[in-house]
Image 1 (cartoon, helix red, strand yellow):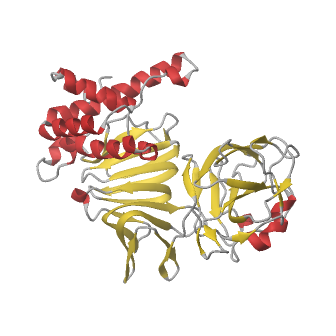
Image 2: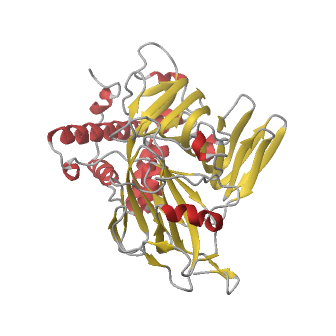
Amino acid sequence: MTHPLAPILCVDRPDDFSDLVLRYLEGDMSEEQGASMRASLQASASLRQLFVLMCYESRLIAEAARAKTDNDQLAGPRAGGVWWLRLGYAAAAALVIMALTLGAFLQRAQHSDEAWLVGMSDGRRGVAMLSDRSDDAKFDGEPLALGENLPAGLIHLTTGRAQVVFKSSAVVDLNGPCAFEMTGVNRGRLNAGQIEAYVRPEAHGFTVDVSDDARVIDLGTRFELTALPKLEPTVLVTEGRVRVESGTQTAIMHIGQVGRLSENGWVVSNVSPSGIASHSPNVRLVYFPPVRLSDGGLDSDTDLFVMAERRGVDAGRRWVAVTQTGQFTLGTGKPGQLPPDAIVDSYLLHADAVAESGATIDASVTFDRPVLGVILAEGLNTSDSELALPDEPHEAFDHRGPERDDHFTLSEDRKTVTIHFQTTTPDEIRVLIRSAVDRKAGASAP
């Protein structure tokens, strides 16, 4: 079957433009080259359409290569997207460029709805486009092709990650499993899962509903929205501002604030420095844990949940922990004691499968300060009273830590913890990093 954008292949390709697109796909674009590419895309609707098709072709090449070799490094470039945001300049540039390059589809004022009927054989009008997807992305229902126009309706991403660009230019990343409904050209609804939204000025007012009478409204921002089973919906503002509404209640949230939707409306609070520099896509940061973990509020067959616990705790020689770098299983390594002057911030890493047969979860978390120790097994129960938050839902139980087939790795620079949990019962480790709070000096540590 011919891809809906195939006629664009007939467009002449300027040599310099093709080279810039290849550099973009390979993540090897300088700031000057990025500016040149943006200028070309802003000036030509045909080149904007061509860019979308080249991204689609790149994906097909990568998939074909992967089918012939087990070596992912030989699989070729993949299309860029919001995932690059975690990789520095290429990230920010990629997102800006992506929004600009889709101008042929996104400019409401300059283009009629007919521009969004490309590839829509049944006459439904599109409100967004599938602009990226991870290699393991799977959708419930008919498979979605990169570059495909999307009508109003539900996207149910069962695994992997996907990105949609609304007609308004709002960009939304979906982290599977996720059920996200597109309800208009500048509006959606999160039924379950997690999304990350980046909203350009043209899409000011982009709205995501979380219930019939509660919503998050963009005021020029980047935000994360989470709705997990048995947990209250939460929104984290990572850039700019949003307005949250619930019934007649309205509140403005700023960067660094997190809100949860309680029975009485939105509760907004400031987020203390997380200490987490980056993490794998299947890591979920939990700001408001469930009342009891045993109730299944943090169950997943794919995700690792991370909860920030107490900060600035005097931990010198108080708990036995794994303090070496390397890979460890239960019973390996030589547990030691933390330095006598250790002041730590604590993080609980939690995994628990939904499936009765269990699940294998691989994930990593990189902290912005060195890890001083990792507490396992019975040490988790004995350290709860002083390291867990007062209202954290921890319960003493057997087999709480890693089991025989589980392992974790602490990197040589002592900043990255990688876990491999084969979980049938809850698997947890407690990671202690050098605190950002110097209690003796009464200030933040460097």
